[in-house]
Length: 116
Image 1: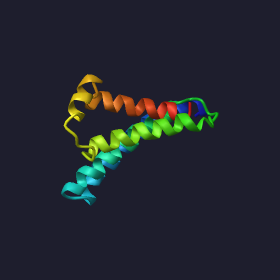
Image 2 (image 1 turned 120 degrees about the vertical axis):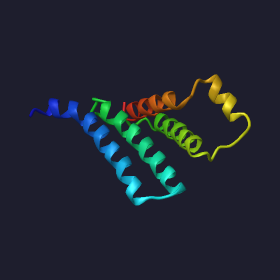
Image 3 (image 1 turned 45 degrees about the vertical axis):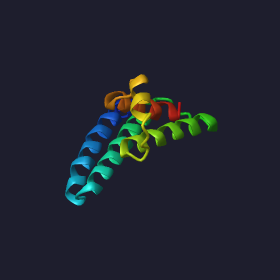
């Protein structure tokens, strides 16, 4: 198997392994801790999937872009975990059309841009 074929298959392996990690987290975690672990595993899998989709092997040292991406990702994690609770949050999410699917796509995009 050539390295190009392997690099093209790595995102598929990330999806499969991420699904297994989420499935196996049911065995090891119970109660409300399960929801937290599952949410963090899903976000980590989506972000890593975005990183692996980037075919650019040259690592960029643009620290400001990485800082902004990290802050946006931290905000998305806090929104998913329910840490950020304010009466304006649902309105803001509605106006930016940030439902669950759009948040997932945004997390993949942030992972893709992290080393771009």
